[in-house]
Length: 327
Image (cartoon, rainbow, N blue to C red; front, side, top):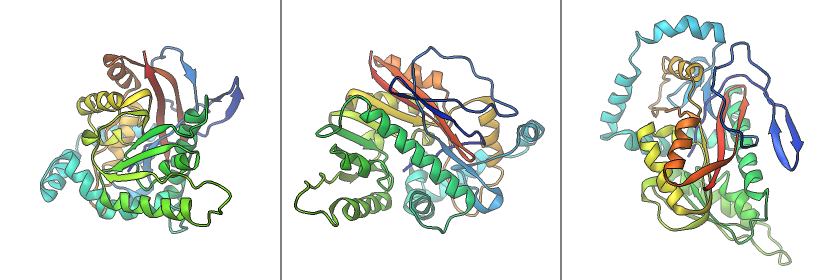
């Protein structure tokens, strides 16, 4: 299960010293960010946005020109998205986690199954988000295979959704343990894995090892893995809980941890809040942005450091992707 955030900013990629570099065009009103410590640059992933009333829900954000964002900022104080979120939680009888579970087992499952799939039954925003998510997966795999093959490497795909990362990892020979809070997502991932990994295999080539799928929230994950990957899931965790979740995921990893998240800047935060003005007809989940500095501090607290980092964005999708290793 995953979601992401964005605005218009096409990327140009360049190869240099075996690393994939990126050079985004400067938007008309770019967000102001403090420079971070230099680390190995890398291309990377995102979270979602929306197309007027047709596609807005709580996991997709409005995309508005920079000048319009400034004008709308004052309007946000007149809205109360938190009240709407509380009402959603009351309907399903719990907090954020219960809302997320309910959403991705019902209307959210149908929505994101289409986005992650290959159907033509998507609007232009959903199609763009699909492109952004595929870039996230591609860049995560590039990170994973950059130094050595994955054959025999144990990987935990935490928040696997419909298997868009787990299945390619299995094709690379990795031993994959995949989980998601949504039983509907896990069932779809398992179905897709059987169709793609087992169907049509000849006797001459060895069949990939099927990923082991299970229904589980992140907090309940156990075991030890060479690598842990968690793409676009931190959007469902406020920073206080995200710190603990990052620590927990790091405790499962022996060699590396790959995370993607929606970056928190003043500019993106306003875009997110504007999106909340258009909740759409279905229940949705709360969306949390995270600053790269906060994520880095959470990793440093448990003895990990960021080795590679980057940003990928399409017109309606943006996200940060980082690879961390033991310090």
